[in-house]
Length: 302
Image 1 (tube, helix red, strand yellow):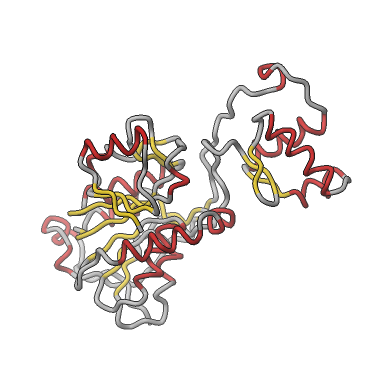
Image 2 (cartoon, helix red, strand yellow):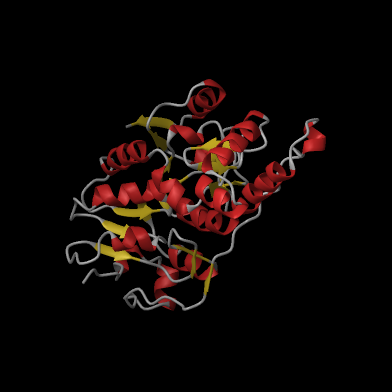
């Protein structure tokens, strides 16, 4: 059985006096929620855009804004029309920039979209696998590694399953279960509230437990960048956990495939100078690339 007991030497002295040095194995609270941070849609209603759309087209836009992503199959079923009819509607709405056309469905405009977990796993899957392997190459033997939540972070965990000389700290149940059945790798999972399909742990308890440790390296998932190069994410509670990990790590690496370079999210995670480097599938260009280079963030391409 995978051990989730943390080494006592990673406890801070003050915390070590207040807490036992050996932590019970992965006992999680039963409180669960699946909340999301709402995104205020842009003012791109038919009146604001100066164009007229049909009642059905408006209903499709409203559905996308509510769900974030809808499939052609589901829309065709709900409206009682053919998939080809829905496809034509999506093409028209995409041309009007009222939604973003994706393979098999439609979502919010790409610069603000927050896809569901299943869609995220499919998006840039090859690039994420390369990023995971490149990040794993940075890890020396005996390293204490924090691995964030998210599909790119999971790729790092998957790459590290080939190793037996690291200690893993993660608020992601999906990352932790990659090591299930291994007795040669120690995995620490903090307590907290289980949230969403990606198996994330959030809340005060999560941050408080992680704050008691010192990580050699932290890998932080990103959803986009602000205009000044600051990494961003969509979920304020997940960002709170990321900030704790950043503050407790000797080296911090952001994880982002190139689709994140041209988009923003909602919450600024930490100043770009807080990151030692950015692990990505290709180097960012333009303003973002110039900004990160000026600040001294190392760009590590996979």
